[in-house]
Length: 412
Image (cartoon, rainbow, N blue to C red):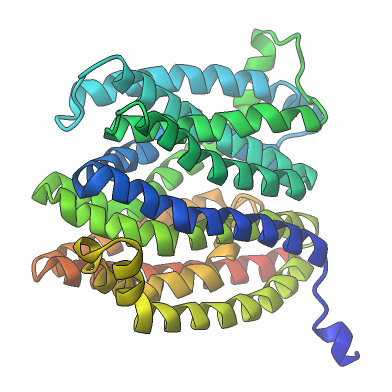
């Protein structure tokens, strides 16, 4: 085998298309998130992130994760899925909105914008997932790249348009987020072949739920725990300490540092899942080559954050936000591990190992919660460090488990 063939990356065009789309979207986000944070202020931005964390965690229930069944159901049943998905998601969004308004003391029914923004965000997040997963199944990586780019572009535009009307609240940001998700999907769906079956009856709906029973049983609790673990610092700080400004500082660096890398790794997992779906061992070999490249970029990014985050925040955000640089440095361990190892951990559904994914999610949620609790008992910054290190260890364990499962599937 020649050196050239040894390091050749299969489906490089798909990886490149996805990477360019994500890179452009995150370049916009790097400027738009600080822009939104600076205009709204620490209090509004912190409250927005606390409410969004709650919504993001519970939004899993609204869709029952039916979007993941596109990888496990046949094409005949898949034609009924869009109708069933929208029926479930719309109903779930309305029920969750009522529940959040009733049970959360932090969410007050100030005006009709509050329930409207919450319901639309829940629905749009689910619609977002369904759109992306369908495109992964069909190999439509260019459409996904365009969607991410449009979504990132529209968020600051819509937010600033609302701001010009002298409306700056957590719910105006939520409404902007919802519209930035819905509008690109409305536009781009016309470029996709329709798989919608207009004649859907009760038996068809039953067929979908029967085919999706394992996904619902294992993936709903698994993804609920995943969302909880991803937002545990904001939820814990908001619920117990009510540190809105501290949440704003953490959320700012998390959205600039972790959110882009999470979206990037999710985009990489689009291609990884497709390759593992087609050929497990070849997909693994290809991913490991990509991981070397992303690791090199990760080291460069960590160097910049470690030495220049103070200056960057002072220049872009002002002195009020400089303290957030300490949070950015504390998040570097999870930044690197998520960038390099996380894409492969999205393949449990492809390998039909949802039960193992659920077991890991339970371990991950308990492990990071315990670490965060110990850290917060010392200081807020220590809490970030403990969370970052614990989450990194847990994600690496999941990475190793996925490699083992892929090798076993290939042997069978």
